Structure formats: C-alpha cells, structure tokens
Image (cartoon, rainbow, N blue to C red; front, side, top):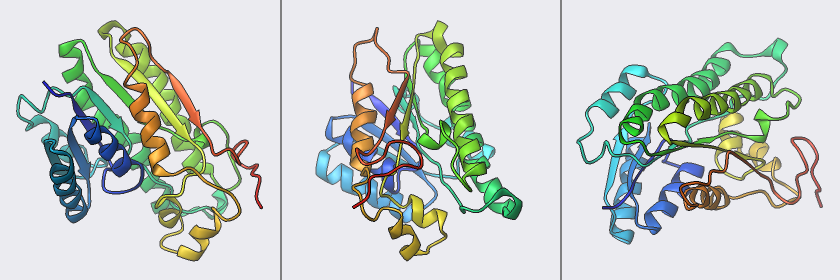
Length: 252
C-alpha cells in the first residue's frame, strides 16, 4: 500500500516542490491550499505525469472549523496519513515594531502558529492511533536569529521551533517522528508576499548571491523521511552557501 503525505500550502513555493518530490517517489498526496484553481491544477499535473492519487483540499489553515471539517471528513483510506508537512506560512511586512501593521501581525500569527497547531491537533491523533507517523514543520533561520524589522515574523518562527520541540516530547511515547526544517534565504513567492506584490523590492532580496530554491527544501524534506525507523533528524538548518546567518551574506 502506498504511503500518504499531507502537505499544507501546496499551491506554490516549498509546498509545490515538496508535493512533486513525494509524488515522484510514488507517494499518494493530500495537498491543501486556499487557491482552488492552482490546487486543482497541481493535482491534475501530478496525476497525469506521475500516476499517483492526489486529494486536493481547498481550505484555510487559519480557520479551525475548516481544518476540522477537512480532516474529519476524510475517508478511511486518506486518514492513514504517514507524513504531515506543516508548510503553510508567510511573512508580511518588514518594518519596525513601533510602526507595525496589526493586520500583518495577525496574518502571520494565525498562519504560522495557529494554522500549524490546528493541523497538528487534527492529524496527530490519526498517527497516534496507528503508532506511526512523521510530522515535519517548516521553520526558518528567523526562528533561530532575530533580524532588524523581523520582529513578529521571527517571533512566529521561534514559536514553531518551540512547538516542534514540545510536539516531539509529547509524541515520543507513540513512536511518531517530529522534524523541523529551517531554511535560510530561498527564492520563492516569500518576498513577493512579504512586500505585498512589490516585485522590484522582492527581487532585490536575492541579488548578488545564489539563494536556495524550493527544490532544495523539497530534497531535504524528502530525505528526512527516508531514514530507518530508529533514526530521526530533529532539526535541520538549510542555508545557501553565500549566507552565514540571518544577516550576513557574501554578495558579488
């Protein structure tokens, strides 16, 4: 029987690349996202190209009732989730805290923290009942080091780090692996979303060095699931060679 992976935020960036990587390796997928057209387009593409089963679920991880409905209504087949990738997340704005936009703060907290918690709360009992599973949370170097004007985004990713550690302890008796993947600078829609569609400003973030690509993160996520049952990678920080930490880059 094929293994099942559930990936949140699968319509672009890391999530899309992760979905393709697992599909290429024969997994069936539950892919989620808010953009129905992109979600269904990805599902058709993977089914056609790779002959796997895909269940697209369009909902918002920030809304508990939508998360509950999506998971509770899964068929028995699809409830046998082997890997949960909590990928959905975003940064909005890059301004000092004294000038902060409250709506931006709430979007980050609701997605990066509460969305991850809602998904984990609904999926982890399914894993506990089977005494197997792997939860992978996508964190960030911003969850290890605070940088100027990062304030709330960094805080949300520090929370992901703490929640991941706590989850690992709580699920230890149930033999469930818990891993955090923490990328550095990666060229996806991340900066475009952060700067609210300002493409020029977003592109400037990655000028002068080679950033990570979504496929690099997908490789790491897939890799940690391939290890023997007695081996778990707790935390993996993944950086471009040209990035030493959250603020120091080698640019040409």
